Image (cartoon, rainbow, N blue to C red; front, side, top):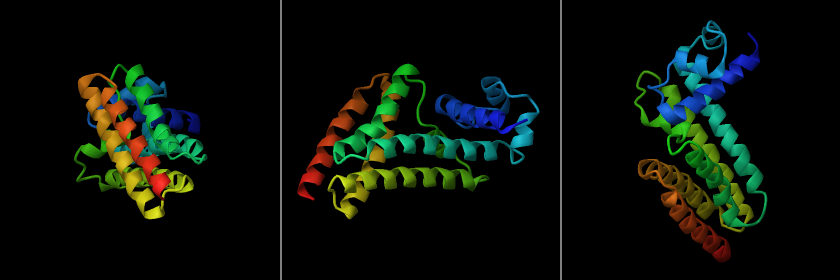
Length: 191
């Protein structure tokens, strides 16, 4: 029962949370999706579903953050927006608007008995904001403004993703992106 099956289960959990949410995803679903042996889930995740979810949130956060980091290396403020949005657009279309953000899926469900899930989600959102703010700063946006714009980008894109799922259309995301790009360009020019 190597780390390969553990990694597959974490990836599968993140994938399933995107479509089914935290409560709608069970260990059986993760086992079936990942192809891992049945007994391995308790071996790798003795803390149960909460431990699996916490790791899936971190995995999903890091996966997207790597894309943001790569795309924000340039000096174009709008590239930071494109980096954050491009992947979401593909996910929405490929899933026929069934999939959203696994971090949001875990966040919006109540977890009074598992506060570590909210903490893990907050850390992911903070990381995305920091990475976006760094990219905006590199493009000439003053630090304080870059931090506020980064938070706006995360909030607006996550909200637009929800609207896209409800409407089964990418237009809400496209509209939000157009406005965010104008804002970031203007912030870089005035910075």
